[in-house]
Image (cartoon, rainbow, N blue to C red):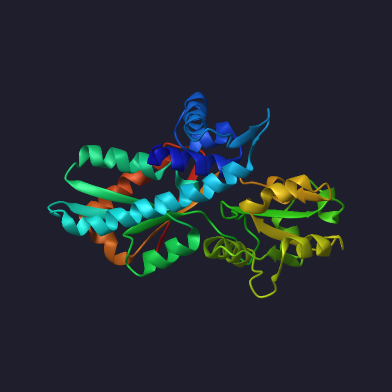
Length: 303
């Protein structure tokens, strides 16, 4: 297994569609298919259930998804710890990015390093909360993140491992696609997670929806019982996705929310780094790479 395969599997779990995942990974659909099949052969189990329209994670796939994220985090941590044993003759730039930017960051950084081989780049795949924290405390030189909602009700992205669902007879389903403005007006529930990382993702999603103060937590069974009022909607994580799918009374709202035609990403950087020559040059490479992708809209934010 290779590090890039972990990133590919995370993208596939996020998009639940081979073509969309292949596009963000800058691969052909057949190449991504072969890579996932290699993983399944290596692990001797099925990670996905496939249909003509989408893919779903099996129970084994959900376990492997958590392993992929942990492996990438551990890989980044290992590189950081080992760096003190190497002769740091060359400058290093540290860039963090969310799963939505998998198709942009590695490609732009690869082209940069080809032209500037004496400058190394450490790429860290992180969730939104971690990116915001690390870019502000100086652990990252720059970060590329997915957008979150604003109080005006603009489009937002759920964290990669969060699923939104409701009762099959909820009035919100009468209109398709589901509008974000409708969702923000509804009371929200969430399942309690014993996994600290998954719990942070639920909190992040609630914050994105301006529901952090009114969110009510419960077990999966308690949340499902409350949804029978046809008024609440709920959040859970991918480790409970199979229970949502298997319950005939529930509908996965994540697949029905109106999506933007463009992938909106935000490049975050401290003002002090804007004048650093190498970082400024990397910014040019990222901007050019994004400009060559009509599906990507890249904004810049400084602090």
